[in-house]
Image 1 (cartoon, one colour):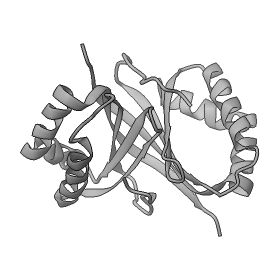
Image 2 (cartoon, rainbow over the protein chains, first blue to last red):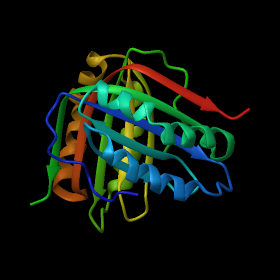
Image 3 (tube, rainbow over the protein chains, first blue to last red):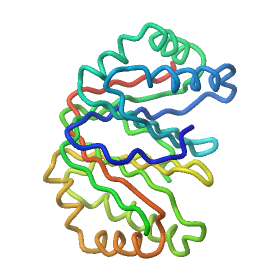
Length: 111
Length: 111
């Protein structure tokens, strides 16, 4: 899990919103999630991610990428594809993926 | 907090990704958050939202809207604007807002 907000990236860029509910006993999930968080950093055009999970509830991860090509490169990654396959077979009750193009953003940081 | 994934909406649509870290004692936050979740349902073109918060960590809420006009209607709502003002004054350490246009999405539900 990242505990930092992604800040200071200028539009346009892409967001990949991944929302999920895990099964009750997702053995092996945490290790693979940590590996994916390491692996995605190697994708050219990857800008950062944010992740939150309500205990026993929804998880939401937002990945930030420079453009659609960077999103596609991550989608094509074979180790990522294998993790997705295991996710459907073993870990997730359900998930959704929404790929958006951002033209406008703003942020606030307390002084 | 919503504990359901938003499902079955066809692109194109807009996502509003709101990521935040709360201050240590956000008195009054929960009531206002609940009120906003009620209020946003009245916005024409609002399609749903998902929310997750890691205890002591990041919160991520994703709002789904039919189009930019629906996003703008929510942004113009005066009670929402007042809640944002209180959020900056009282509740948030930091936050970011990313408005994206979604052309592609997919989902998985376990049989």
